[in-house]
Image 1: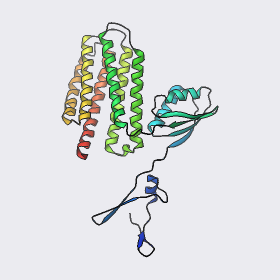
Image 2: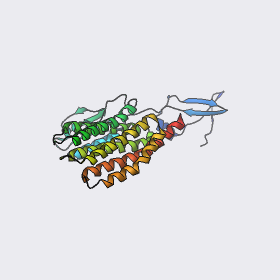
Image 3: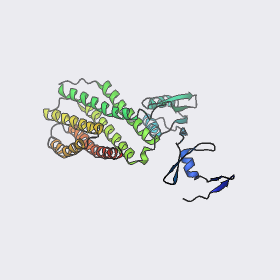
Image 4: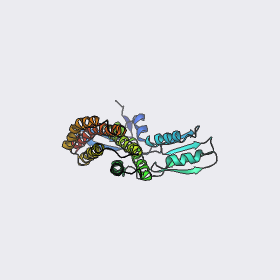
Length: 302
């Protein structure tokens, strides 16, 4: 775009900056910008000023699932402050339960008519990578619970532990997606790919929770062996991600089809359990493609 220079005093010329750019950066009068000179050209840059993203809502439904879905989406989409008004008597309790697994969200003000929910986490961005990996770690722990339940000829399960691990996977998944939004990573190819990976790993974790809930009777040895194969499959992908190992990703992609075929051949034994294990393999194979893309981008940037 072209801009006219305006004389400022005897020895200076000024120009105006596009309003759309200054608004995007959150700049106002007296803020500073960086002017860099290189090869006869000038480049103007500025660090974006972060403003809390806020909204006001009236909660018309007290359905717990609805409230949880509402706040989960507000959280992932980067809202820092929500002023809420109620209709029902138990709405405050529903809100408190809905935000207990959302890192940083707390009820800061409350009265009979409503409450305010704020994000009080000051260092969420710095913790992104470690908490992203915790989605995987929670999934690995869920795998171990499933494997233990399969090996024991008993109906006794540690349901409370599985529920806690499932909540952890959801918590870290929501947090990681929130950071992608807050840091504008969704505008970047790598950020979009990571968003997909997070969703896929979370779906794998949910499938393990479902398998655990269906383990009422002992399963066939072939099903146990296939579950161990899925564990190795997912761990191989995680290692390839951590090490930026393209050969490791290629190996995972090469294993996907034969592993699916092996599972389909075993469907007659424990069909419900095998259905979810096959879905995990499919999800992991899809994630492998995205991990390979992320690894390739990171190698190019290094």
